[in-house]
Length: 107
Image (tube, rainbow, N blue to C red):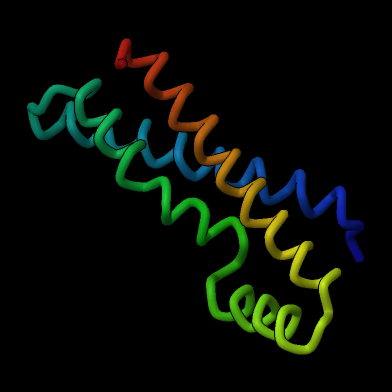
């Protein structure tokens, strides 16, 4: 079984990799479709960010269920853990988006 810190790291890099991988492979498809690849890469990085967060935390239903039981059943520790998973997933997706913007010369 993985520890809390191992899971946080795994979640962070899963969301980071989802954004970077989808953007790079999407830009490759843009090359074949004769569309500007850098513009496509930036657009995909912006669009895929929420899906990277959901994929990294393993879906939304279990997370919302644990948050609900944590809040309503006063299991604060479980709720805080789930919130931290969401925050680290968001951070990973944001870092991935920033890397793609930097690579593509975006804003």
